[in-house]
Amino acid sequence: MSGSALRRGGAGTTEGLTVLDAGFIRSWIRIAAEGVGAARDHLTQLDAAIGDADHGVNMDRGMQAALAALEGQPDEEAPPGRLLELVGNAIVLKVGGAAGPLYGTAFRSGAEALGDAPVFSGEALLAALRAGLEGIQRLGAAVEGDKTIVDAWLPAVEAFERELRSGGDAVAAAARAAVAAEEGARETIPMEARKGRASYLGPRSIGHQDPGATSTAILFEALARAARSTLA
Image (cartoon, rainbow, N blue to C red; front, side, top):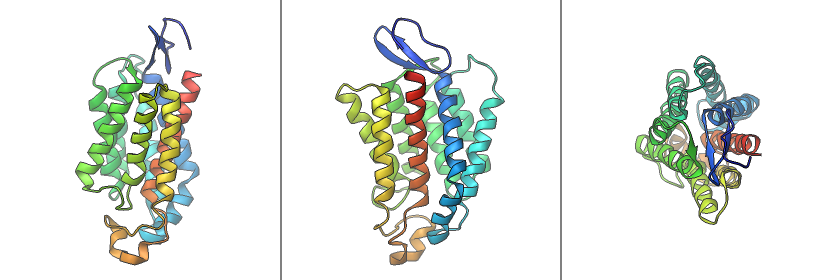
């Protein structure tokens, strides 16, 4: 969208800069909830191999709760950061195991980064995504290569930043991030898990894709789709 006015319900441009609003957050979570729901059985199968076989069910329940939380916030003027906080809170309450606190912390940390601003830029979105990563790592103490969520979230943030620094907009950055997250998830297959329930298996965890990294890739694919739909 060109011009000086921000289109309510997603994104627009003002003074030549891309800006996003609460509608973008709502779109992201709606698409993410659809994606997680569609992948529920696949996520559960991945988790059955190296975990408790509940990641798909838990994430589906959590994302549906997050979506309901946003639908229960009818205030169109609610700031994007407040919406992310609602998402994080819902996930913490509804998602069992380690995933609930980790993803909940990620969204809450992103909310804190966005603050109370009614709109935000691609740079602010990058800051929110990075804050989410830092929250995950602070809570889970995982680093790249541990076969966790981090192995998809970290390369996604790096790809998003590289695209912005090269002059790309939020749409291109989100698309790059989605590809990097998907690649990161696949790259967990030959890894030996060093964190979480999968780490108990030791070498037997090799050869299986990490379910948390896979659900992270779904979140970033949803981010890219939301960016395309609201900034087209």
